[in-house]
Length: 109
Image (cartoon, rainbow, N blue to C red; front, side):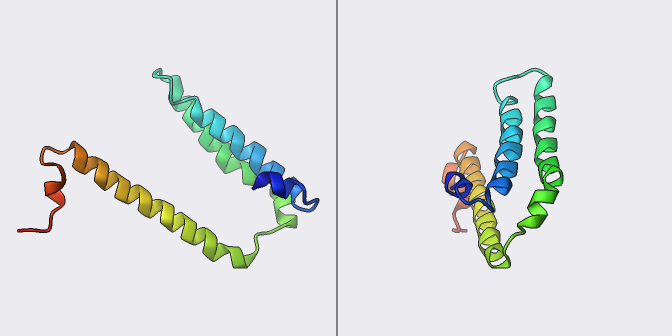
């Protein structure tokens, strides 16, 4: 998706801000997974800070090409779908770990 957007001259600067900023945050956050030392919290914090600072650093570019209001319902729907998926997945994982399995989720009295 970002590869196609880079071909558009008016969208390329915005894509670069998102790609490099959030990509750097993801790489920093990724380094926390394999390490079990106290530094992993530093990598996690650095990745999180990078994600929060990216829109602020690129605000000049991002203000020239604002979000289109027609896309906001799509983005909200996608966010809601992801949150719902994560909630359902956590219930399923917990039911597998419990002593009674899926019997805890039954509606029978």
